[in-house]
Length: 110
Length: 112
Image 1 (cartoon, rainbow over the protein chains, first blue to last red):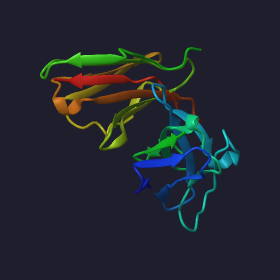
Image 2: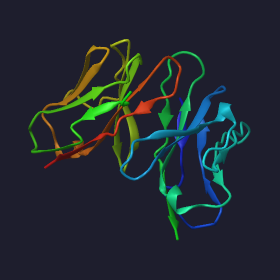
Image 3: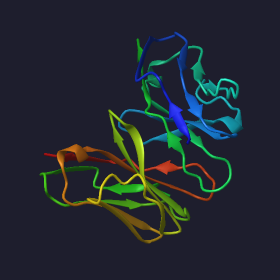
Image 4: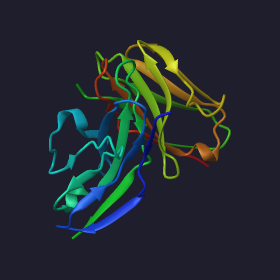
């Protein structure tokens, strides 16, 4: 069975501090991994996906197959990064139905 | 395109009443998803349609919940009768084949 675990419900940091939002997954194979973000009063939207290997708004995420992790990182947090972050997994091939983690609320203090 | 459109944005109802949530997917998308978001359980997939056909409804919590997609541009999620524990934010999302999902703004449901 596929599963996504985000161990932290809440992460609180100060502006300028490094941020790492943890995501571990369980899947026998090579899934696609994503990070979605939900800013206050806005809809959920895709932040980045591992196959793109890109940096969005200063965030990066590296897929570590050995540790089955896809942690989201940013070297210097900004107040506007405060949001709810969801890690998601989708199986390769077939129907495209992501499994979401429970989410981590990031609060960046000034 | 205006994106995925959900209505109403907020719904307050009394226990036992019927609640109908509506969703208009992005034109051209052939997959539609209904999710429920709560503090305790995060984002849960309720049901998934592909080409208007329900493919996976294993996430629908009880028989009180039902969903329909009569055509490619409209879907409903109905709760009858509603209960206080149904209070949550309900999201609709749509996607084209093998592409990322686009979410609506959600409906915040409060059952008193």
